[in-house]
Length: 442
Image 1 (tube, rainbow, N blue to C red):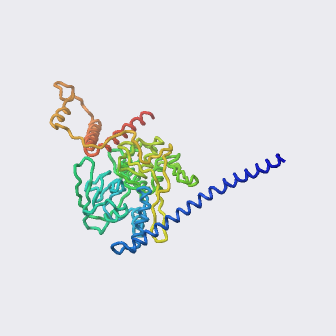
Image 2 (cartoon, rainbow, N blue to C red; image 1 turned 135 degrees about the vertical axis):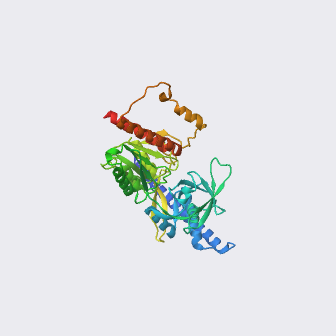
Image 3 (cartoon, rainbow, N blue to C red; image 1 turned 30 degrees about the vertical axis):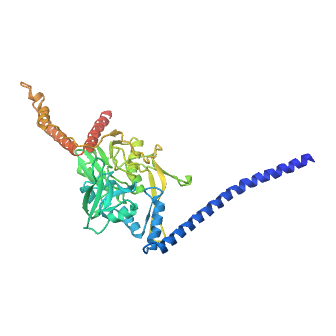
């Protein structure tokens, strides 16, 4: 009897435990759902009270949009609501043409922070810099506005003036900058030859970036009289605020023969993606130097990280911005959309650069090189073997004289560039060294 009772009791106990394990999560889920509905009821209650009792009549649509904006802004600085007109502006922007001042911005501690000015725009010409804070727009405080609201206020009719107040590190007081709004047409890639080095200045990652890059390399090769006359490329990503992920992948692939470019990982492991390079290098395997600074963000960091991890390029400049997240644009039935952070991206070695940035291989802070005493400096340069009394003369052939003149002109051009853009001058010098080293190795 005892044995039978124990067996039944044991079975009953097991059943009780099994039931507890099955029903407990359901109870927790039901409790969470009840809590969610209670909070939604609370929102509805507050909405109704504001609508009916606020001192002035309010627009219901504005109230709901403000609530949506507040919800998304509480997640991270890059998630936001795009009303129909904002959604259309975003689509126009990624196509490479839009109206405004020409700055990429984010929100930090309630203020609008400049990520980077875009080349050849009112903001760039006015001298705005990465890490500047915009505290006021036309004398109205930015504090309390969402990022979308602040951007909307900076946009307007082409030809109209706007005054923004800038807070800049190193400046004792905020100062005003007046700009004239323009239609911003972004040429995603600008190219030029510096001696026998091709400079590829990538300003943003729009739908045209890869196509502009490929065309630019072809034009440089034609200008140089053939691909063999170009010894390498500088990819200038400074103050590039980023843009489309697929374009960052395409630009990275343009210089890689194989291997992973970037991986993205969301909350659900099944949504993880890896993007790999295909065979083919637009540069023909020539040495690469990539320039970055604190204004290089997002897609720029994907390119720099991929080329750095594969040891395909040397990264020169200052630490990048550190935006390691991917936003997905989700259209809504209202013809608007939400920009929602859905994943983080990782470089081929598995690095997340979120809030860390890409560290350059060679740190070169931008600065102006000015001699303290130009006369003494000039005198120092004059002291050479040729200045010594009785020094031997060197008779040169015409070809040798031409080579010497060309070399002297190149050094003078580099010296001038050092005073204007130290980082680019350093990249050119480095690339020359890499080309010489590669030729010696062959």
